[in-house]
Length: 355
Image 1 (spheres, rainbow, N blue to C red):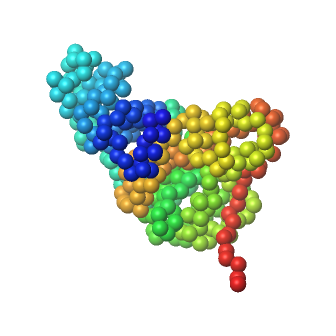
Image 2: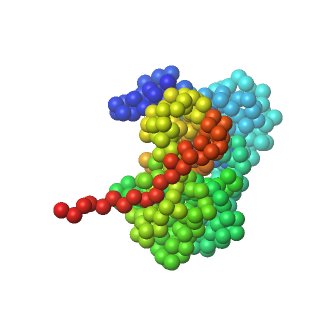
Image 3: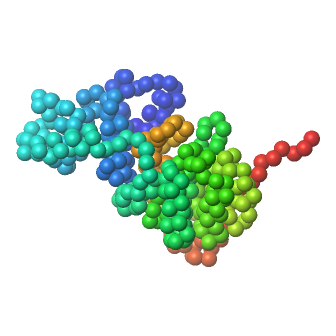
């Protein structure tokens, strides 16, 4: 309900937070819970910093209450947020023995955490409770190393794909990839002119190799984003063996078959469902879409943009796995595979017919 209220208010151009409605607090806490369940602790801390930077004292105290299960963590945040002793919540009144930890936390948050994506990196991060390698690629050297290690040597069988694009040209700016073990963000905007067309071609031949099952959502849009930037791609990805499993197409196909969908989705859904609603129906995951319309052409990207972007590539891998398991349980392996096959698509060229 709080999310619905905020969506309606936003559509109507109403800033309901100015009126201090109860739904504002509930919506704020709801987003915190989603972020906490989704993000690695480091990125959750960044999310909190960003969420509270323009909030009043009330929101800061609400946040402290949300993390009150961990008194040391809550006290550290109270010090970071500069909550005075007179405003300190009762459950933190007797926590001065955490003062040393709080000082270290404040120092760490002030100096060692970068808010921006400014260099290549390989991290170990948790997403929805599972650990993955998170690779950030913004230099040609890192790009070459990534392709060699994670594609040529590891030969992944499943890859989730998602793109962010320029709002006016529809050209890809960021490419996100995910497997059951690693996640990667490739900054296409920075790398495009630094990498030869021949190397780009070899990369996409690896990414669209017939041995890989590629997974996406509403993937005709991603096809267009990529082909607008890489003109050679339209021929490569039109081949049937370069197909992509589009979860939106698969979902629509299941709905059109008229079968009982309760065992697959657990709730009533409609055709052309969005990724966030599909994530909720299949995985009970509240997918954060708050940065969907952020500026993906501005550099450097923020760390939160990075986490948002790669989550879309990862979640389609998780959804596909769970949907496949449920389809097999309900209809058997053979029928389930036939149903899944209906979700595969290839690039369709949209060309005007000559007059």
